[in-house]
Length: 412
Image (tube, rainbow, N blue to C red):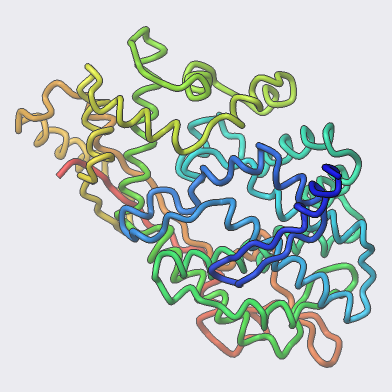
């Protein structure tokens, strides 16, 4: 009787603000969703510190992967109706691949991606997580990993998970637009999915979907400048990066710095690719790490005896964000030195390490990155052409070129 209750309990429906009711495809996928590795995504924000600019942008990676899985189910159905063979095993595997594609994100997502670990991308960490889950769930996770890593014989399945026009992007643009209130990111995901086709094993878009794709590219560019790379969001996220770096330096020099056990593990140790493969403790500590570890640390660090760490942490917690200047050209070192000199002369910062308070870096907006992968259109003639060649919208060719800007941050 208990077993029957548990089995029926797996036929879940999730009420999603974007799509309405989402059904969990089957019991196996439900069990994977219930695993702590996936549930952890409830504690990882989708948009990092963007809520400091857009107060509604407090949605999570968990909401996003459920939504992306929902869109994947639609995409598979469309391709099957068009005569492309996707077996039930392949369908479940590609649903699992998109469900788990973001499982490797660390706290505050991209902001700390290369500071918690040493140049190990969230995609690589996702692979390690899926390999670990495979020990619990068996060979079906192996097929999902093969698709995720683009090692499967049907490339279009991987392209549905990760490409220039994948279910990941179709979900996050609409979802991030909804929660931030920035309507420019809204796209016609249903229309785009209906226009999907497969040609020689590669994912393509039917010619009549060209205007929907153009809108998708423009929406993505606008969302980058208005939300993802909004200058105030950039200021906050880099302040967080430098606070973490300061804490790491202090801890390694013998200073007393509060941290949860999981965060302390990564502050004390430079974690490399090989460490994930060779030491189970690395993945387990990463699985225990989420936004709450960082937020709690910032609250405690805002009273630390180190004035630099205290100032950075309190400024984030109380939203006293640094001034940020943006330029098409790199900022000269002389300007940075002059700002440091002025801060030192004010007396308020004379005992702080200004290398952590005055910093510059580069922003890159790639709405459509042809170097990564093309969006190909299937013409009525059967010819395959790149989006930029088929489009009569001159903006699309321009959007294919990455835009680089530079920023300079410092206390007000």
